[in-house]
Length: 360
Ligand SMILES: Cc1cc2nc3c(=O)[nH]c(=O)nc-3n(C[C@H](O)[C@H](O)[C@H](O)COP(=O)(O)OP(=O)(O)OC[C@H]3O[C@@H](n4cnc5c(N)ncnc54)[C@H](O)[C@@H]3O)c2cc1C
Figure (cartoon, rainbow, N blue to C red):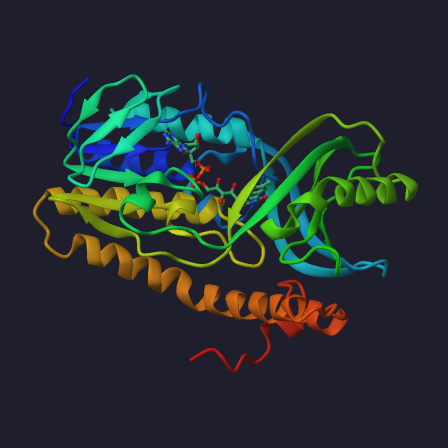
């Protein structure tokens, strides 16, 4: 192992693998580590991606589970309303992450699994879990919502949603992502995303309501069993944190070592829907290219990366944050948000896309 690689990538999710691939393809000496033993496993994801991801990643057919044509949103116990045009696909997320990691390796990056970032010093020196000390020229934090690399440069995701998800039998094939909005789910929502003969059934809430996740998900599951849509069996359990507080500063310094953040580590999950796979892929690619430019002597590469992220996400995220905060204010005031506010807070309804005075 080169103890002074051009680029150390921490995290081999979609953001890290794309960054490693982009940088290695351009000839950088790239070392990429992940604390997981196997890329993408265990899966902590509901596995839906919009169709636009096909424009970024070739060969998604190899990790495709099923096509999604629309979204159906139910508020409380009311019948669901359909939103057409929310097309996408369900991925096999473990195989997707493995595919991206394999592409990074094929481009020449050295990948090390079962290897964690143990410490990152203020001068950019990095200690790995096996005791190795590295002195990379550039560090890429693609280490997820609770990024240690981000913490080292003061970029920390302060708003999270905690999610719990089970895999259940799906009794009839289905082509929509179902969303469940409920006053009992502060800061989050429930979902049923079909994967052929099974489905991902999950729920997210603000961390303060974490204790309610298990019973509320059991209730949602029981309701769908009663409705004859899913089986009672629980075939798998997962969960995780989703950053929902918006974009963080994604470039910084530790001594003379530049640091870039991508994906969840840079706060790039959508503050309302929690979707972050596409943003991880795109930001990882951009971060890899920015790293190449920076090490090639381009003085504006880091600022250019921040600008690219601002152009891509700031308008969308500002709307989502304004909607999310309006809802959370009601909870904080001890009120129960009614259907009108819930509609304004969800991307599937016209009300969400209406005027927001807070937007500049
Ligand atoms: C329950 C749930 C459901 C979701 N559903 C969807 C969905 O349907 N669609 C969607 O678009 N998004 C979804 N998301 C969000 C999506 O999963 C993330 O936005 C996406 O994974 C971000 O990719 P990433 O590469 O930035 O981070 P991650 O995929 O989290 O990858 C980070 C990697 O860093 C590694 N790592 C962390 N710390 C260290 C360390 N100290 N040392 C070494 N390695 C480390 C981790 O092991 C991990 O492999 C969901 C999230 C959750 C939790």
